[in-house]
Amino acid sequence: MAGMTADRAPDGPPVLIACSHGTDNAQGRQEIDAVRAGIQALRPGVEVREAYVDVQQPDLVDVVASLPPGRPAVIVPLLLSVGYHVKVDIARAAASRPGTVSALPLGPDARLARVLQQRLTESGVSDADPVVLAAAGSSDACAAEDVAEVQAVLAELRTGRVRAGFGSKAAPSVPDAVTTQRTSGQLPVAVASYLLAPGYFHDQLAKAGADVVSAPLLPSPVIAEIALSRYDDAVARLLDGSSYAVAGCDRPCRAQVSSCVRGGIARVD
Image (cartoon, rainbow, N blue to C red):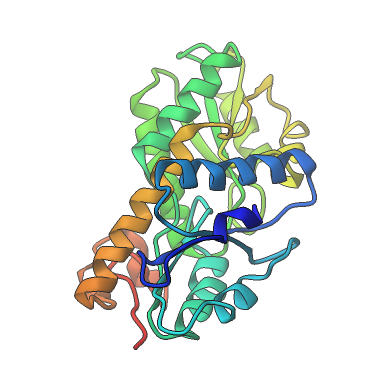
């Protein structure tokens, strides 16, 4: 992916730092590489750089520090929900350099729910079958709200009941959610993998006791499209000088957290 940073004008549009979690899974790495390639194909005039908050290199902090002085940049989290990496790791990296902001994560977004429904259909899951929407999980209340919003859209696309389950740090766990869905009727229970790509958390879903586990969201062109939507929104806020406006956030999680990313995007000058 190094070729993406070559031959860009220094006064061009803000750099797009596509920041992923990182994984040891070879296929997962390929899928994230393909997202960055998709972003570049959709927006060839934008310099796209890769970065990670864990497992892989280059580290986000190093990528931000390496940017040319005076060149604005937007960190786009290739993550499905807010949580520690968005609110702490990515926020700190953005705050460390003038003219750098963080965009919102990929989710919640109705397009993600439609991909989830597509994956379930591809797995042979009937619309009437109960489904557990399986997310990685976070102790941050806003992350659970992000998942709940996608869950609500997915439920509108189906006739069967949809419950959320989490891989860690939130309740119910995916196995517990599967058990609850199974006791509510005699239909097969499916797990919808609300994960970007194969890796540790997706592997764990096979142990949750469901009859079917759908594939992760990737590969799908939708992810690159959403990432660019987040970038464009952040660029607009960067150019007009918008800052945090958390008082305007009316989501139910707002009262449960000390920091909010939905009311605006922080700008550091």
